[in-house]
Length: 234
Image: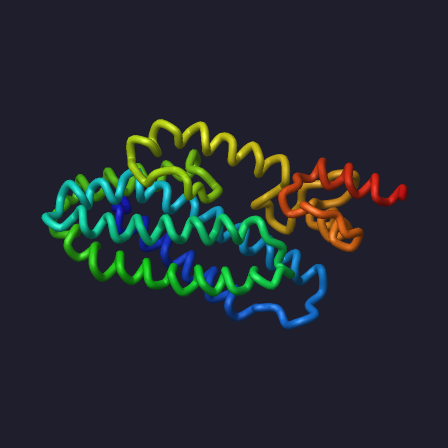
């Protein structure tokens, strides 16, 4: 059975691959609406995976670091501080269109800080915690993190303190709200394959962009469909 280090290593590898793909496929100036919509969807998937990963680390991994290591508080404070800063960036990024001038700047900022955070965790924390945890403890924490992904938040919540008690009590309600919003908007669905008025959300979004509908990034499928329909009639 995989232990906590196996679970986190797999998460880190997935994130690093996503960041590498995004860095390699950065659109050129004048990119098509379809290319920008695809990039927005790819970044949303990154945000989903990062949000789940960070929430679960804060619930189960960093408390173990604090409990088991003499310098655990210092290490955990540094790491959760990095994660809070990352949530701020991801939260801003989630509200922008891929064609926004700030979008690529924020993505580059997260890419750099995300890689630094992974390196800090893997080189400064893991070696110490490996020695401090028994195989049973490492396996139990790994199971909690792995299984927790089904009910973890899918959006960054920078205003929520990174304390396990807060996260465990508020987490289920926050995650449920995130998943309800995701279901309504089609967020996280491969290629946006959720239809509204015969169109995917990505298709509606691009039409809304052409029609100059403001606030479109925050709209779900039904809201986009209503606004697009109204704009067509003008």
